[in-house]
Length: 111
Length: 120
Image (cartoon, rainbow over all chains, first blue to last red; front, side, top):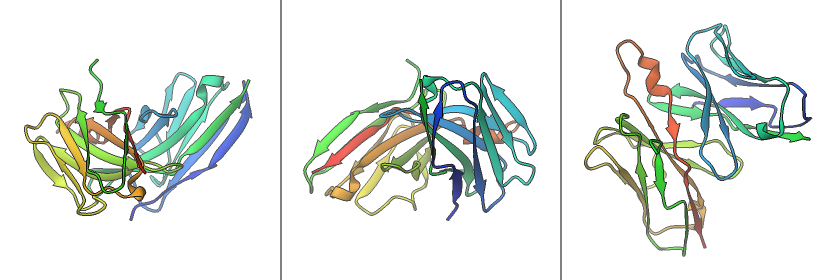
């Protein structure tokens, strides 16, 4: 089946630091999505990417759709305590009818 | 509130009992999805509907799992004869269908807060 590999699995950083995480796939995707999940809640969409090479920002978050269409990156600048959570990448599988998720990157921010 | 609603948020049951979860999607969305998420993992696709039609159900975990969307609005996910391994968060999501000018929009799922199942 389709697999998305996220790295790192977890990060423990100091408030104010920048964060970078990535996601790779064995297959080509035509859409990349980044979600954040807080404990006990459902995932919330952060950024959607639709074109290879696309760079999109949402506040302090910036995501890029890799040129090979097999990877994507998410950067968070000047982290704050509320950035704590699990970040998931996702992409469509099976003709776009099934969104497949990576295993997540758990971010912890020390005030 | 125009988001995706799920009920109940938490369910504790004994092994062997049947449980049912309900999902009310965003009203403008005609696609509805069910996912399962176990601790430390990403959400895992189970099934999806477009209107009342269940278009993919091969990923349902066993024949004890079934989903319905009889009127194309809310959906239910039922687990019969629950087992301890069924303990997980069950997530519902909805989206627009693929549109001629924006087919990738169907991939943008809005999730509910989930229903957490604990089987004792």
